[in-house]
Image (cartoon, rainbow, N blue to C red; front, top):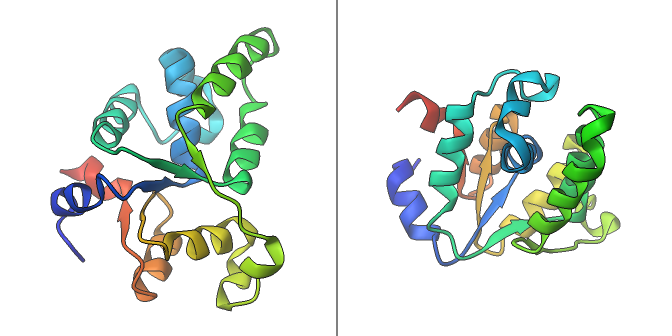
Length: 161
């Protein structure tokens, strides 16, 4: 595994693909960082983690996502209080303009060993082979991608530094 600082530097112009939990942290923190402490899905994160994520993403010229990841983030976002949803989703829509959304047909993604990990992870594996760094907090996903030779950075390793 490459040193995280070297990975971030090496991929800054190629792009980073952010997994669902971290993209939720990004969107929710951008909307209202106080929401991080109240969202069950983000209970393991703090406002400091949001700041770290912003710092990690700042040098990248491309932030990659997929419709699958965005659907997961949208569904998880429904846990925010009803009174905040309209404003949050307006912020969400504005944030989408900063992302490079790439599509892989589900049938294509599920044609390999990644099918057992689920559709979103299978799509991540296919897209990441185009030379993107995958930023995730999912240990199983990061280990599996790494074993396939796909550059991965587990956000939890950055939190310990």
